[in-house]
Length: 358
Image (cartoon, rainbow, N blue to C red; front, side, top):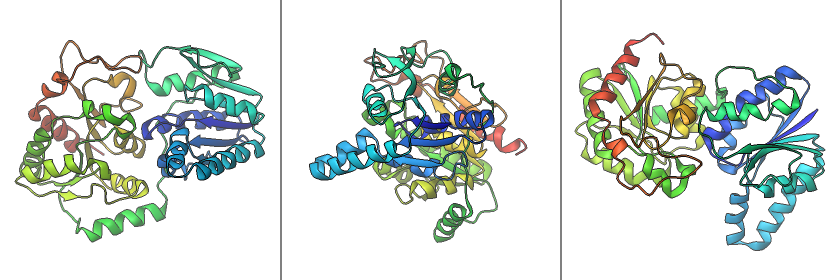
């Protein structure tokens, strides 16, 4: 059987499909699996042993290319379509929530198309599962639901992310370049994150000044080396944090590829982060995390599977939190839920995980 998995979303979303891949392989070890994702997340999937071929070009990617050159955008679109059609997939699991992916799958000759019918966008699916949003269980468990029409049982377990020797070497070289050799704990700090949420990502960010205080207290209490992580678009946040701190962090924000970021996170003792892709990279690698949640529900978007011995999730007691439901934020710009989470709470969580067995 030849499967195509369609998920054009961010790092966390594609990692949430890795238990699905494992479940398919457990059901049929000879299954051929293709994966259609966006360009940005290719490195998250490229070493997954269950994936046979990756099509890394989403609608968003094509739109950006077309803005530079309509001819190039058309060429890329046609190349993608014929590449998928050539594989002669038997069925697809469509996590896109977008009827255009279903249409392309149909035109490419994929006879069985299983997906979520969100806002009646499932018109080109053969097997539709009604969906208003991810609200009452983890996204990974919603993703398992698309296996039910196929008679495939879910295989429980962690998210999967492989780190090959080449990736580890790249990360080691970066650590050497910035003299990251430390006798105490090495703690990653991701003060921004959530790039796939676009302009709404800022609504998930714990205040930068609190990250500054956290770095100073971590350095003084635990003798830890802190490393600032993130992509180039997050430099303003990282600079605000770094400039205000008394203790210097190693600033790697915007200085690594995604592959190198994966390798760097793999070398941490602990990651402190907002809700975002780096959290799920760490969870998939078995790295301990302290994550800070405000408007989003940690039961839905938190570390998977939940493991309080390795992952501590902090959230406020604000009655309005979590407020993000059915893929929408209410008109709140105050972020009371994040303001209420204190540095002392994060420090306590960091201390708990650093003192617990690895």
